[in-house]
Length: 299
Ligand SMILES: C[S@@+](CC[C@H](N)C(=O)[O-])C[C@H]1O[C@@H](n2cnc3c(N)ncnc32)[C@H](O)[C@@H]1O
Image (cartoon, rainbow, N blue to C red):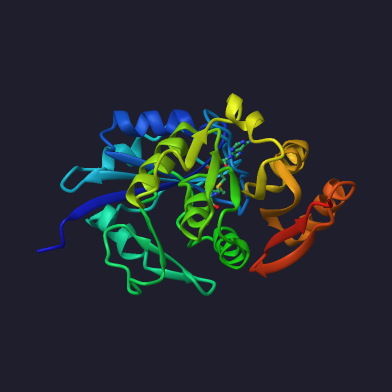
C-alpha cells in the first residue's frame, strides 16, 4: 500500500494566466495551489496588500488521492500553460507545522545572546536567551541579515541604552536589545501582523509593555522618539533604507549607533553615500551576499 498523501500536477505558465489557471484548478477539485518562480527572477519584499508576480511561474496543484486526473489533464484550457504537466506525482503527507519547527534550533549570536524557539528549553539557561515564535512575521535569526544585526547588538548594547528597531517583524532585534540590558525600545513596522507578533514575543520574554512600545510608522510615538535612540537598527531592504534615511537619522541621539541591514554587497556604496552627509557608515560584516552597515552619529 502506498504512503498517505496527495497527487500533484505541475504546470508552467506566465503572469497573465496564472490567476485564471489557479481558479480553474480549484474548480476541478484541487485542494491547494502553490506558485514558484520559474526563471530565477527575484521579487523584492512587497508592501502590505501588494501581490507581485513573476513573469514565468511554476504552478503546483494538489489533489486528493483517488481522484481521476485524466479529465483534468485533457481539458486544461489551451494557451494558459507554456508547458503541460506530465503524469500526476505522489506527494507524501507531512505535518507541515512540525517540519518547520524541526528546522528552527537554538542559535548563539555573539558572546552573550541566544535565540531559542519558545517551545524548547534554552541550552544555556544562564545566557541572555530570547524566546521566539515567529508567527506570521519575519525574524527568527536564521536569515543572515537578522543574524548579523543580533551579533552587532550583542557587542554594542550596554545597560540603559535606548533602542529603535525599525521594521521590527517578530520584534527579535528590539527584544534582544532589551534582554541585553537596554532600558527601553521602540519597534516600528508597517505590517499589522508584525506588530501582533512583536507584542506576543515581548510577553513571552517577560518584557513589560512600559519598556517596549510597538507602533506603525505613522504613529505619534515615532516622532516622540526623535533624538532619543542610542541605537537604531533597521533590517529592511536597500530601497526603503534609502527612503527612510531622514527618519532613521532623526531618531538617533548624538553619538548614537546606526545599524543597517537587508542590503546586498553591491548596494552598499550607494547607501553609504546616501547617509554620508550625516554619518560615516562602513561595512561591518558580510554573510553570503548580504552586508551590515554600521556607523556613529557625530556629536
Ligand atoms: C526583513 S524584515 C526584518 C524583521 C526583523 N527586524 C529582523 O531583523 O529579522 C523587514 C520588516 O520591515 C517591515 N517594513 C518594510 N518596509 C517598512 C517601512 N517602510 N516601514 C516600516 N516597516 C517596514 C516589514 O513589514 C518587515 O516586518
